[in-house]
Length: 505
Image (cartoon, rainbow, N blue to C red; front, side):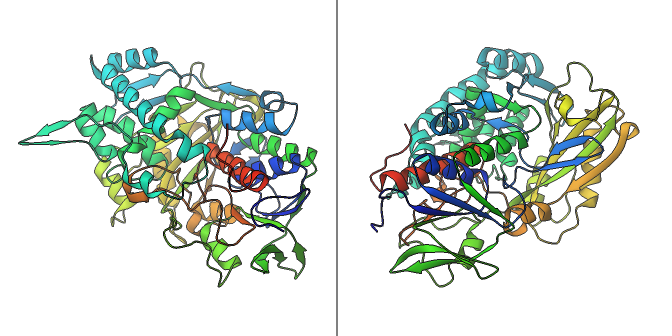
C-alpha cells in the first residue's frame, strides 16, 4: 500500500479516545474507512470527564468551550445533524468576572468590544478600556498572521519561520536611550497596557494555559483575542455532554470502540505501521495507526523507532497541570451570578515563582470559580455546584490538600458564606488527570504559539514511520478543545487526501 494516501477502504486503529482522536475517527469513518478505537480506560473523552455524587454533577476537565466553530465543522462534515441539535450550546455573559488583588472588580461582556472598553473604563479608570481595545486590534493582527499555519494547516516543513518570526506588532517602547518592542506577554502588559490590573488580566490567559508570561512570547496575545472575538460558550449539562455527542456521532458512523483495551505496542511491517498489539497479547492489524497519546507513551509504544527526522519539532513536555476542587453547596445560586470569576493572586511574582521557578511554597493562588446556572448539575432547587480550578506544577506524588483548602479560602471572597453552605467537597489532583490521560504528572498540553524559538510548537501529525500519525493535544496544533479538534481534522485530511493536503477550508 502507498504510504501517503488511503486507497479505498482502509483499516484504521486509533490509540486513545480523547477528543482529537474522536474527531479524527468520525471524519475517517465518514470517508468510508473501518475505524477501531482502543481505549485503556472504561470511557471516552480524555480529560473531559464527569464526577457525580448525591445528585450533583461536575466537569473535571475544561468547563467552558472556546471557538465552537471547530466542533460545528466536525458535526457538519460527519452528518446531517448540526452541533446545536446534539448539545445545548449557550453563550456565557458576562464572559468573565475578574477580582484583582486590590479588590477591584470588573465583569467583561461576551464578545463585545464596546462593552468591554466601557466596563474597563468604569472599573479601572478612564483610558484603561481604550488601551485594552488597542491591544486587541494588535492581537487580531497576530491572529490573522498565525491562524492558518498554527490551527488550520499541517505543520510547515519550514516551521522555523514560525519559530523565529514574532507575529505580534508590538508598539515601540522608549527606555532611556533605547527603543525596544515587547517580546514577551509580560512586557506587553508592562509597556503597552501600563496598568497592573490590565497586565494581570492579560497574563491570566497565559497562566490559565500553564504558561509563564515572563517567558511566553508576545504571540500569546492571540489567547485573549480568541475569547474576545469568538466568545465564551457553555454546554448545558457540562462539557462532558460535548464528549458524549462526539462519541455518539462516531458510533452512528460505525466507529468501533474497545474500552479497557490497553495498547502496548505499535507494529511495523515493511517499514510502515501495520497495526497494534494489546496488553492481552492480541494483535490487531491496520493500514494506518493514529496515536492520541502523550509523547512518553508513544515512545514506549514504538520502542527503538525514530519517529522524527533531523530538523523536525521535538516533543515539548508540558510542566503544568490542574488542581480542581468540586463543591456541593446548599442554597440557590444567586440571581445575576457570573458563570466564571477569576480571583487574581495577591502576589503575582510569588505565584509565578511557585509555578515556574524553584519556589516550593505556594502562596494563595489565582483561582477560577465556575458557577454554572444549570439545573442538570444539582439534585434540585436549593443547591449549587461550584468548581474551583488553579494551575499547579505537573509533579507526581505531591500532596495537594493544603493548596485545596487555600483555594476554598480564596473562593470565599466571591462566594459569600461558602463554608457554611458546604455539604461536601471532592479534590481532583494531577494524579487523576494522569489516570485519565496517561500524561506523566497529569501534565496538560498547551496550544501551539509562534515565535519563542519554537518552544511552543508541537510535533507534526505525520511521523517518519509511514502510516503512523499523531493526533490530539500533544501533536500539532497543541492543547485545548479547539486545537485538539483541529488535529483530528488535519490527520483525517492527511490520510484521505495525502501529503498534498493543505489544510481545513
